[in-house]
Image (cartoon, rainbow, N blue to C red; front, side):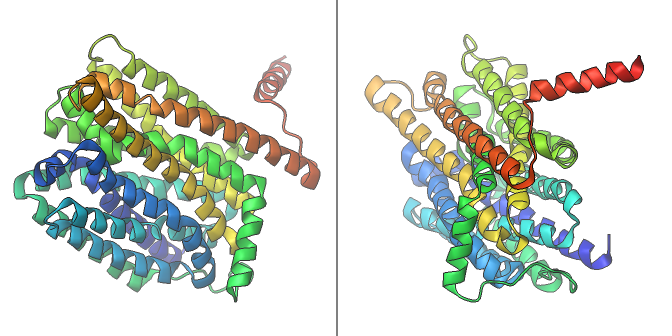
Length: 439
């Protein structure tokens, strides 16, 4: 790896680590926010939901801007806005000001991942891109560890204002690195012309939206990342503390389990994606089915689920994080490089749309169970009912993946003459070839 590529990649990794740290600080601050603002579950969920609404809503327009202005400008602006948002949260005297601060955090956050993925696609050879993207995802997972452990400890020891001001200071570190080290693309890069007008930008976006591979990326991202995002960003700590009775410090520490699991699984998923590009959708489907099974085990266990069951579930939903990155690989192989910002913006909308819907509906159901059925707001029974929303997302997402995969494979056959056999046929043929080689 050249020195310039290493510096650009390192700065991108740090920027994304900083971004995810800011995004997930509110996940461990749920109980502290309850004490500070005295708000109900639905109102508290707005701290995360509006942030995600802004993030998801900005993905496509910011992707269009990224294709036009490049990653460096987008990341610089995004980190500056994110720092201002965290300062507003730190100093907020009421829930309304805190929500507005999180809106700014979401807007700034929306620029970072798309920009880093664009940098990777510009600076790395094609076959190494899925692996490099998974290490970007790992940087984000580490950001969740920083929010779950040191930030949570600082919040407990020093209070709301000091903790969130310190988070804002961390953003400034990332901003300085981006300004000093990021270069949009190598000098000899051939990426095609950037759009010169909004008409060209919108036409490019429309072409990306119509590609079946972009749609497959959207649904893959939708169905794989949302359970982990919902759990780590908002409802994980309340569920572990009030539903299962774990101490707050232990619950915050447990949020690092899916993060570490994702960091371990990510490179393996990246290698599988690179080696078996025609089987990427099978990896997505496998991840979702295992998540659904483990989620059911935790929710429907008679009484309080054992600690081991909780750990296994957290590990499995953690794999959904790197699994969602496969969606961007669908976009990469289905779109020209100069249109990749728009295509990745479409893909990234998927998971975050599912996440904010899930977070808000769960908060509303918890309030409903409390106000109409007399249950404690954060009782285990209330969480079991509310968390069933996860299966609605799984069902919608799986239908989307299967339909988009069918169109993508038909397009590949029409354009390239590539016919992809069902997975069981491919496995059977591989086993037959292995037996023939041994015989």
